[in-house]
Image (cartoon, rainbow, N blue to C red):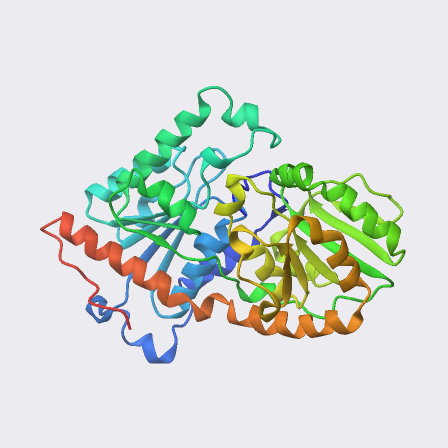
Length: 392
C-alpha cells in the first residue's frame, strides 16, 4: 500500500492502546526473568509513530507489539499531526524504530539527539515520492514544483541518520540504497490478530470488493477498472461491487462506496466479500508496492484476484487467489463469481496462507534488524558496548 497518507482509506486507533499496554504487560514465562539482563538478548525498543498513517500498523505497531510479547521492553511515542511529541521516553532505549517522518523537523531533531547519545536508529519507509503518479489526487499540492526534490532530499537526510533502513520491497530498497551505504533490509508487511475475521458472507448474490486508497485512480484509469467491472455486472446479474477509498462510476443500485473505514473494523468488512480484487497497472509505483492487500483478503478467508505483476507476481492458488494479465480480468471474475466450488477451494487455501502471514511467525526478522542496529550503533560509538549478543 505504497503512498497512503492521512487521507488514506481507513484509520486505526485501538492498536495503539494495545501496544501501550504491552509495556506493562506480563512477559512470557520463559523470558520473564531475563528482562533485567540485556546481555541475554533483551532490548528496550522505542517506537516513534504517527497514528494517522494507516501503514504504521504494519511497519511499526504490530512488529513492535510482537517483539514486546517475546520479552523485549517496548516504549511507544505517538507524534501528532501538529508534529508535537515528547521524546524523553526514548532516551533510555537501546534502539528506536522510526516510521517515516523524514519531512517532520521535530522527528529529525529527536533522531539527531538520540544518534548523538549512541542510541541505535532504525528508520522504515514504505514510500518513495519519485514513484507517485502525477494524476493522484493532491499531487500538485504535495509534490508539485520543487516539492518532489525537497522530499527526496529529506528522505536521503533521514537515511544518513539511521543505522539500519527497513522497507517493504526490493524495488524500494534499491532506491534508498542509491544514497545510503548502510544496511537496507527488506521485510514484508505481516498481519496482527485483529485481522482474522470470519463468517461475514451472509447476503444474496456475489460481492466483489476492492480496498484501495485514492492513489489507485491511476490503476482505475490505466486498466479501465470501471468498464471491466461494469461488464462483469452486466453479464452476471448476481454480482455487486463494493469499494473502500477509490470511487467508481457504477450502477448505484448494485454498487456501494465506502469513503473510510477504521482499521480495527477492516477485517470484518473484508470478511463480507465473496471475492477481493487487487488490480495494479504497469507503472513504476506498482513494482514497489507490498503484497499486504491480498494478505488482508486471505486472512479474512476471501478468495482474491490480483494483477500478475509487482508484489503479486508468483502468488496464486496456493495463497488462495488468482493472478491475471490485464486482458483477463473480466473473464476470470465471471468464472469465479459463477462457481461456488472454485470460491470454496480458494477460500480454504486463502485461510491457510493467511494464518502463516501473522506477525508472530516472522518476528525474528524484525528482532534481527533491531540487534543489527544496536551493534552498528556500538561500532560508531566506541564508548558504548553492544548490549545484544545474538538472536534467540
